[in-house]
Length: 198
Image 1: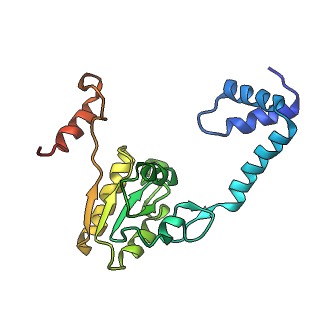
Image 2 (image 1 turned 180 degrees about the vertical axis):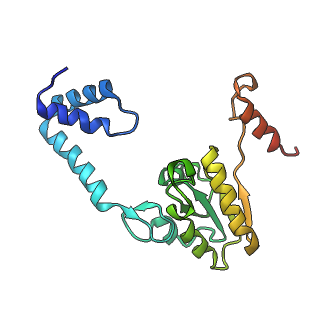
Image 3 (image 1 turned 90 degrees about the vertical axis):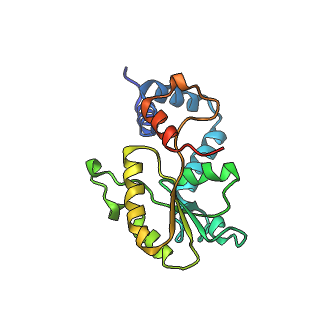
């Protein structure tokens, strides 16, 4: 379908977002046309401000508008534990839980030879520098349970082991409220592997 150029550009822009196909992009573009102009200006300002005003914490790599981030600055946090995650959104998910009071380290990706991403392409060197500080006693590897996430966790654990710092991996398995019959073999296998005594 042929749209006037401004709508066509807007649709193309929405399609650059993950998970947005042509139909959803067109629906969003037409929704923007129906919005009041001041609302559209507010929306566009929020996009520009987020891009301009956010940076990565020089300590942990999390997104922040102040450096270091509020988590790294918080003196009440347990500085002996560092939870390693792949992306800033993983920190946000962990913080929602409110059970973890340690620090974080964001890798900004995972090792993926197929995509040409090696250990030096993600935030591993900075993690190793942080661990030279003797306050860290445990590193919790909370990378995603994918092939890349597992490979990254294994690689990091091998690098840390000689230092004597305790290295743990988050458990994988069945979600609470899930049914065995709907779980795939890998999930069931991980759940069995991670069993604990009651």
